Amino acid sequence: MYSVLVVDDEIRQREAIIKSINWEQAGFSVAGDAENGIEALELLEKLEPDLILTDIKMPLMTGLELARKAREIRPATKLVILSGYDDFEYAQEAFKYNVIRYLLKPISASELTEELEKIKVEMDAEFERLKSGSSNEEIELRLKKTEFLLPLLLGTGEDIYTEEELKNSAKQLGLIVGDNDCYSIVVSKFKTFTGENRTEAHHIDFVNSIVGKYALCESFLVNGRIVTLVTSEPEAMSTKLRLPVIELVQSAKKLFNQKCTIGISQTVDNPALLSLACTQAITARRYTSDGAGDIRFINDQERKSSFELENVEKSVYKLEQLLKVGNKNEISDFLEDMLSEKSRDSLDYLIVQILATAHRCVSVLSDSDALSELFTSNNFFTSRLSFDFNGQYKKELISLCLDARDIISRSQRHESEAICDRALQIINDEYMNEDLSLTDASEKLGVSPNYLSALIKKTKSQNFVALVTERRMKAASDLLLCTSMKIFEVSQKCGYSDQHYFSYCFKKYFGMSPNKYREEHLGGGNV
Image (tube, rainbow, N blue to C red; front, side):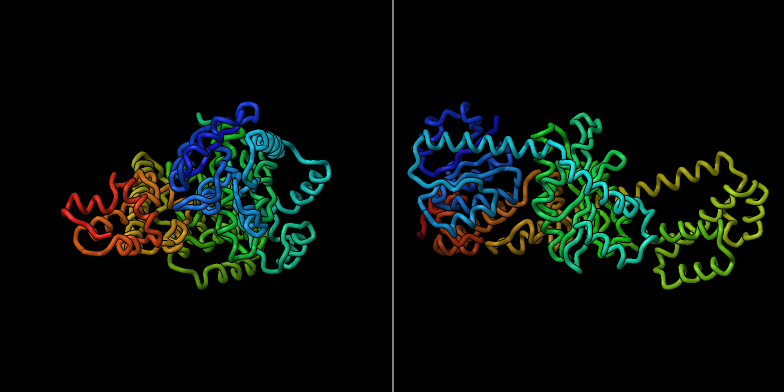
């Protein structure tokens, strides 16, 4: 049984649709109804319907505008548009926004019921595809892709091939198309709502089916997670990933009654960097435990990060191999190159990693006397590395790590508050701009729209649109009471080009029309 939201500005028409359709027979239940697109968008977030049935010609917001905005909020929801316009271009435009039927009016109750029954069959088939496995041919191709990609994702295969060889192999397997394609890693985990991991092989096809509607992708089950390689043109990557990850979360809840949490890496242009991107995505997903949304781009949390520190870890792995089997000239040359032209932060980290690597290698391959000899003969670096481990030493180490966690936690809290404060400042500065959107604000702040939306809801208990409306209504109140502007002038000053839309929003917010509001407060008004 699928839920449906019915939208029509004519109450008789809306009631007629709700009462005349045999919803149960068609496989649907009416979750709610709305008299316009604005109300429908509000109900969309609350009711999470599977389908919206909407008239196309409505005041304030057309059905097509509703479809476009609904897709941004809930890409898992389908739409059916009822229209009196038999216009091919209009219908073509509609199908970009999850519109699965463009039905011409007049339409009888029996005809609409018949269409809904067909839609039910199609939605069932789509959900089955999302839950079902692959064909033998698809499995065979996936095995070839797995053989090529898994070593890269796990960091064990990047030294086998040159960058050109890697790209050629990726092209032959259909993993990339253009010469300038870049890559991002998406890591998904599926759990019960009580927290038990339920990520299984069938989620591979589920993720591929949804992400594949938006971008070229390939997924694998690795250590209880679905790891997905996404390929796209560099400038399109962030926009191509924003909607599919929302749809993954929404569809996992609907189809499997599971909570899906997702982490997304930075974009890389070299297949040899995929292991680092994979580590980033795994880390990004873990940040979702803070409760600020189920989707996290690594740049949302680590916006100052780069691959420099992560490359240090790859470098010390190579150092470890040289310490075990290399000669002194190879080690000296490698370290000379490794230690040159590094930033202060990465150099500090590198020194610690070099010391740890030397310690680990000697510990594994020599006896305890040799380890003591190494650190005694190099006292300049190791004077603080006491081998006389005692209770106080342990206490100091624990204290250092707890202090580190406090610093990180404080920084994260401060950064979250700062992002919200800057978002409010953008709203305050730009509320007059009718096109101000969550995406615009997120681009200015350097975070993903998904994260900004979740962060605002967590810290302000409102969504972005509500905060914009609140600011516009405050400005409208000031202009109505402190100026002699006409209503249409106030409307334009507050970011509404349509006076009727402004009056609707104003009445909904204050409980009375702009004219009535002015009359009650000042005793007069200007139309």
